[in-house]
Length: 357
Image (cartoon, rainbow, N blue to C red; front, side):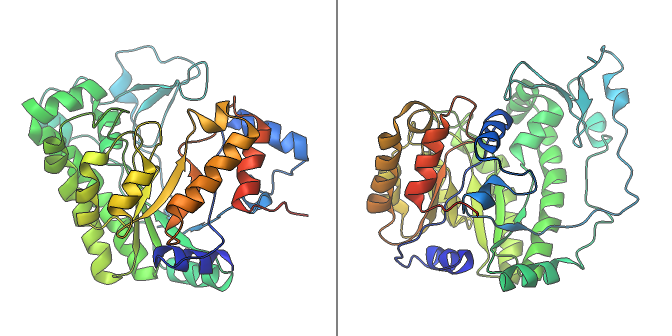
């Protein structure tokens, strides 16, 4: 079976022997793997090891697009020489290792709704979609799955506003939260509609809204701010292409909102962290409604287990969760530098990976 055939069987909950699988890597681990196997940079590690490699199909920015100038939002601070302002207008200050980037938010000092409204939010005005349908058709001819990645709603919002400020606004200034979220929803809505019209297979979406104990805020607040906006985006896409798949990601324990994610249209749930949720229990409760993507712990098995531990977890997941075919195997996060190469190889081998000649 090729990747597209396996994907179709997966979303149809049809039992099959081959499972889609993939992993992503921190730069240091990727460098070490490339050195060990002498893999040229022109070949992705996903391709080299025979992993699931969907094709991204998205709106195209105009050639003459000029980046927005956000420097005025940082006139009150000394910008470190290694820092840069990203496309959201957020100042990123790199830390000592991969995940320790400091974010300085452009609206951190805003006190009025007018200041929030005057911010030059990123948008997709002038972006084109006339290439998308052909890109989907070409990918399908090559037996590849197509995806369209949306931007985070909650995460982009708090990065623009500031983490503590955004959480406080949920209670004290909800109109600020709603305005920022609505601007981001507009962008996601345009992408999702274009994807559905082009025949894209999967809309890739999500937000990290949980820690390893529970949501970072109450389910009531999630229902008020995040749920209706994601529902609006998903509904718009499904009205055009009813069988479009909705992939949703959130790290942490999101068990309290899984039923509502399914309610608004999510069909593929990622990553179902085994350190804070029981993937087998989630499968038993919701497995007839969703495909589960993930389940391989990056805080336990992959970095600290033995080669046999890794292989056994893969076997267990196939047996206990893959019986109906609705399973995609992947580590629950990017593979960190401390992951032994042998453990990654065990993951790839047990999942059915093959090396490119």
